[in-house]
Length: 502
Image (tube, rainbow, N blue to C red):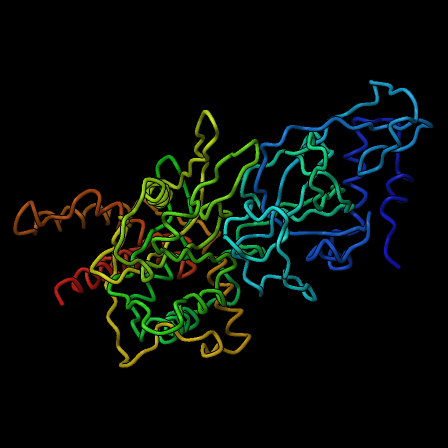
């Protein structure tokens, strides 16, 4: 029989109104911490009864709604809040019993791969009544108004949390003054937990790692998606495991362009690479560039009438964003489109995204790995850290095969691939003094050996090569950069540069 969360809540009630939300969170968290699957998943709000206990893993989309006052203690020393209230005519209010709660809007995690779901969970097949608050236009998702009672809790946009609470249907926060306000699913939170960027917690180094697994992963990506191009697949691996490691000094995700990537010629416009990556990474969003997308959709969030509309780039930390240029045709990019392209370039280069408000703009930190598929010698719109021209090794390769054509490896091997990528996403790398000196001496030798100062490696190249070496070490599940890893990074970069002369 389902737990009557309201009855338990009322049974816990104490007159210490300030401490009570923490008591509630501690109690319900202790009961369900290792048994979340026993709580029904909020995958379609209409399928639940009023005041059902539900859970949802969601991204915080909007933190701008004003806090609400609620009556924490109702007449007769009864519990208030969590959707419980008395008729307005039930008597005078003791203002000492009023407390404040936080109001948020949260949405299904954008780009979350189905394999990340807990056992038995049903995929979302619902479209919210507030579709403008989800980053991907037209995508099925759940949107829910979140009400949090613990004043110690603080939330940031794009954070992912698992929220557990009591479900009601209440007016949308931004239109409370309307004669007939829109009713939206509202979750009165009992407890919540932050979710890591890998969705499934990972430990570095991966316990299932072996050099053979890494080689097989690169080969699988290459042969399913990149016509057998192993180097392009290795660069792709380095990009998708990259993250913001530091802002001062700046160590940001490796943005990658795979150039000379064929445009679609048939009915399918979704690269096979999308289907392959969705098997490997926890968070994947595809941004299909076209004049329609560039000119007529939002890339950055914008507040309209005190309601934050989402944009393509409002993605959770740890996401991989695959930008495809194959759908762009001749035509004019209008002013809004130029602003969208600037926002995307700024997010790629500096991992900062400006949210637009009526009289101001605020830049929020992001942590998204970008991969651009470009038909030409370079991206038509963007500067990325690295450009790898594709060199197909397999004739008549279908770069836009249907998902059922992509043959996944055996489940145990697939789990090892995912573990390698997830672990690398959270790992940290050091460099000892001896290796640092070796790299410095090697760089000086390269500059001295260059035929001219124009051909000598620059300090920017040294920084980029250090980034590549760091990512190589992570992909190898090492704890520090070594001289062999440095040499491997140099070799990978040398082979990449050679592609421009072929």
